[in-house]
Structures are given as structure tokens and as C-alpha cells.
Length: 463
Image: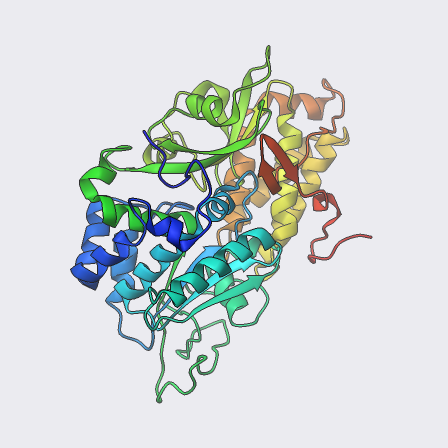
């Protein structure tokens, strides 16, 4: 398989991009086909969202295009913040033009009023690339009359949650609203229970009445695939991957590997081969104890490394593909300490709108910390179990479910270590591994956010 999303050398200009086999051809074909047939082509390709649950892209576009309640918008999610993940930033460094072309195609297909690119303000290199690509597309007339706005947002994890992302674009903190973007989109005036609706959008008065403004949200990798699918055709795209998970996936491999990296692999490749091909395997004498697919899915034990990397196969073992960011933990890692670190991250990043999430994640984290430091007791395991049953009550976003699924999977998969820590048969442990929240990843070297341990639950930092 020849990688097509990650070129061997970065694409640095629109002229260079248009000289490739794909550049501009996806947009040309979409304009020949028209919106409906373009969406049909994406549906036939089987392209799924490259992040989260992997929802079929064509079906998502069709659902937005079919609605007639106010204006439509398209939002590109470039606010990558999942621990262990660097794939969207790698794509924006390697070829921002395929992403912008995919964004323009999406806007034309759903009849969008405008497009927004939401990216963390700290991603300065990636923002500069995107800004240059958008400007060159506009100067070449490839955007038509589409207005593209780049919005720099905060560093919080929830900025990447699509409902919170719309709030940031509208000038608010990243606090998830209650209803999804296809029900309550950008600048919507339709009222909704439990959240305050906004006024008119950036173009002024909506002309009276209420408008839901259905909004399409796709991430960088999903949109980057679109011009390739349209230029190459569905048969070409389906020649890679599996029936339910066609194509390739841009995956990040970090943790206890020789050389952390980002690579493009065919969906259906075994997790073991992904770790070897992208992360250069483990140090001599070490074995894989567990793998985390970010902090959004259940832990994958080392005994299941032959599982194919697809949406359906990882779901079948009780985990998930997520953003295809794999955190490898070798046989020297403490699973109790890893569970504590992940729980602490989710606890701190919880926004506090839903009390069971904020209180529950905090209580679970505190109990895990006592177990890690040697002060744990059986009652702490019971407290954790009790909170796991109700931490998701009333949740506006998926974060509480992540807490529930991830911590429960550690307890279920490694019960012996938890019991040994509580009973004092293992000494207190503080793992010196950095938490894999990536700031940079280049040349086999991962740079992690050293501020992680200083972040407070109110999103401020200790001095």
C-alpha cells in the first residue's frame, strides 16, 4: 500500500498540490456530480469519520443536507487533544491542501452558508499552514463564494468535543451544549431546553422565526480523505481495508516503544504490526502488557495484539479505534498508576456542568491515588465501583462515559494488581512515565505537555 494522506515530502504550495495526481480533481468531480451524487459517492465508498465512533461520512452529510431549518454550516475540527494522538497535526504539517479541498467539497455538498476551522491557538505551525492553504485556495478561486474562518481556541480537552466547539466559535468557553450540531448548530435561534440560544448569525437578521442551523462537524483526517475518494473512486478506496472499515488510518504510536511516530496504515492491519511498523516495536527484552486507544476506550490487554485495527474488530473486543492513537505500556508499567493518571486527566478536564461527572471522576481519582500511594483499602474499590455506576448520569458529552469505560476496564482486566496494592502485597508506586499528552512528535521523539500535573480542576494552573 502506498500512503496517500501522508506524502513522503510535505506539500508546501497550492501549485505543488495541484501538480499531484489528486490536487483539485476531487473538487472538480464533486462539481460535475452535484451535491446529491457527491454524497452518494461518499456513502458508497464506506468512508467513516476518523475519530470517535467512526460514523459513516456520507450518511452524516446526507442528514445535514436534508434539513431545512435556517442556514447550514460546516465546521472542521482541528482541535486535537486526545492523549497519545498527533495524526491531525501531522496531516496539517504534511499536506494542508487536501484538507482544505475536502472542506470546500463538504460545504458545497451540504449547501453550507460558511465554513469554520476550529484549531487550538497553541498549534502555531499548523495554523500557519492552514491559513496559507486557505488563502491560496481563495486567490485561485477554488473556494467560490464560500467564506472560511479560522478560529483559534483554548487548550482544554473539551474544545475538541463538537458541541463545545460550536460554543467556542460563538465566543464562549468550551462547555458542551445539550443537543448535537445537527439539531442545534452554529448561531441557532431555535430554543432548546437547558441551554441559552444565541441571536442572529454573523450575516445579521435571519428573517424572523426560529432556525436550528444544522451544522456538519468533521475532523481533519476525515476531510483530508474526501478529495482522494472522489478523485480515485469508490472501487480504489475499497481496495484497501475491510468491508466495514475501508481505506487507511493515520495512527500515532507512543509510550514504551523504540521510536514514537505517526504513520499511515491500511485498516485491518493487526495492532501488533502497527506497533512494530509505526513505533519501531519495543526495547529488547520487553513485552506489551497493555495498549490504550487514547483515553476514550477500554484498555486492550497484551494478549489481544493480533486484533485487526478496524472499527468493528476493536469494538468486538470491548474497546474502540477512536483517533487511532495507541499508548503502549510494557511489562514494567503499573496498571493501577496508569488508571489513576488517565482518571486524573478526565477529572481535571471535566467542565463541571454535570455534577455526577465532575464529582464522580474526582472521587474515583482520589480513591485510585490512595491505592497507588499505599493508603488504599477495600472501601476505596467499593467507592470506585459505586461511582462508576452513576458517573454518566445527565452527561452532556462523552467524557463521563470515557471515565466509566476506561477505569472499569482496568479493574476488570488487572484485578490481581488492584488487590495486591490494596492488601499491601505490592509496594506503593509512582510511575515516572510522562503522561502522553503530546505537544510535538518528530523524528522519533515525543514531546509531552509538562504542565499536565499542574493543571487544576477549574482549568487554571498552579504556579
